[in-house]
Structures are given as structure tokens and as C-alpha cells.
Amino acid sequence: MTPLKCIAVDDEPLALGLVCAFIEQTPFLELIGRYTSAVEALRSLHEHPDVELLFLDIQMPELTGMELARVLDRGQPGTGPRIIFTTAFNQYALEGYRVDALDYLVKPFSYEEFLRAATKARGYAELSQTAPTAPPAPAAGAPGMEEEHLFLKVEYELVRVALDDILYVEGLKDYVKVHLRSAPRPLLSLMSLKAMEEKLPARRFLRIHRSFIVALDKIEAIRRNTVQIGSASIAVSDQYKEPFAQFLSRWS
Image 1 (tube, rainbow, N blue to C red):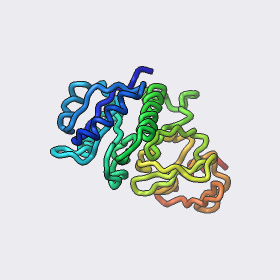
Image 2 (image 1 turned 90 degrees about the vertical axis):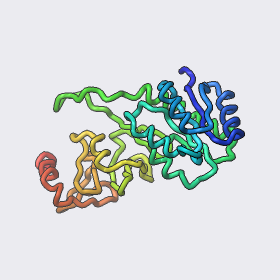
Image 3 (image 1 turned 135 degrees about the vertical axis):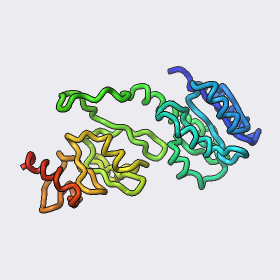
Image 4 (image 1 turned 180 degrees about the vertical axis):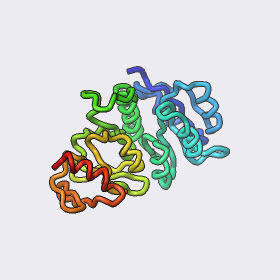
């Protein structure tokens, strides 16, 4: 794999110099620009669309790092550089997660911490190269065309999840909890339940409640208006009774 093209942005010269030194001593990174202003960085990104990774401070004059991240986040998904925040303030961690940052380094950080974040970026790039890109939708009922996994953003990592491992998905405002057969604790991902529903094949998953999607082959029992999956008893709400009744006609 060729080195990841990087730029570093920080209005503090010493902090910028340290990040650049870390980049230059990391074999799989290539430093192609260093800037003391997010405005300069934005201009550079327009001129160099091949930049893959951005080490970005948050507290800067004119345009903050978080504002720059939001600008980049409005573009076509998957086309902009990934971001690793480098900041002295830890209160922006959740906001960094919302703009899909890869990692969040709190100053002062060591080269070991930097390398861990950079390695995550390399892993993400490798995963993105091997992950399938939006194939044309197959005809209804076409065999052998369905993906067997999906990718979820969990904290600051892209996690591959096998569809067969999913028991059910629970919606919590801006988040979903994905309950798995292989793990005692669910995965928490920043996305809406509707967005998750669009990722899951309708042949295998069904939304039965405004807050729940269930894996149809994991249903162990049906009692009145509830389904049983492991120790979880999940209600079928009135809004979803008709599609659930259609499933029942095939299941019974």
C-alpha cells in the first residue's frame, strides 16, 4: 500500500512541528503540507483532492478545526480526507465523533499514541479499498447477490459486522445499539434506526417497532404481540403489525 498523503494543521508552531515530525518518521504516512490556519488548509484541500488524512487542531482563529470538519463532512460521503483531531481539550470528543473523525488525540500525546491513531487510519484505508462500493441493486429475489456483512462506525473505528451475527437493533435517538449473538455487549453506532434499516436486507430483517429491528431467523417464539429473541422480549407496535402479519403467514 502506498503511503497515506497527509496534511497537518495547528496554529501553535511547536505543536505543528511535533505532529509533522511524527508524520515524517512514520513510514506509511507522507506529509504534503503543514498549515497554521484552517482556512489555508481548506484552500490546500481544494487544490490537492488526493489528501487522505488530516491531523487537525480544534481551537484556531478564523475557522476552527471543528468548523472545517463540518465543511468537509457536507461533501460526497467517502470522498474527503479522514480526520484525526489533535487538541488540548477533551470536551470536543463527542462532537468529533459526530463529524466522523477517525480518532481524537489529546495534547500532550506521545509518538506511541500518535502511531496508534495513524495505524487506525491505515487500517481504515485498507478496509475502504477492499470494501465493496455500492453495486447496482439486484433484481428482487435474485440469489447470491446479498452481502453477508456491513460496516459500522463504532467509536473511532470502522467495524465489520456479519449479518448472521445480528440478533436485533435498538434505536436510541441519534444512536443504534446492535445486539450480537457473539458478544455480551451491543455495539453502539452514531446513526438513525432508519439509516440502519436501509443497510439491512429486508428479506432477513424486519422493523417491528419504532425502536427495534429484529433478525427474522433469530426469533425463537411469538407471544401475542411480542417476539422473543434470547432473553429479550420485544413488542410489535401497531404501526408495524401489517408487515409483521405478512411475515407470520410465512413463518407459521
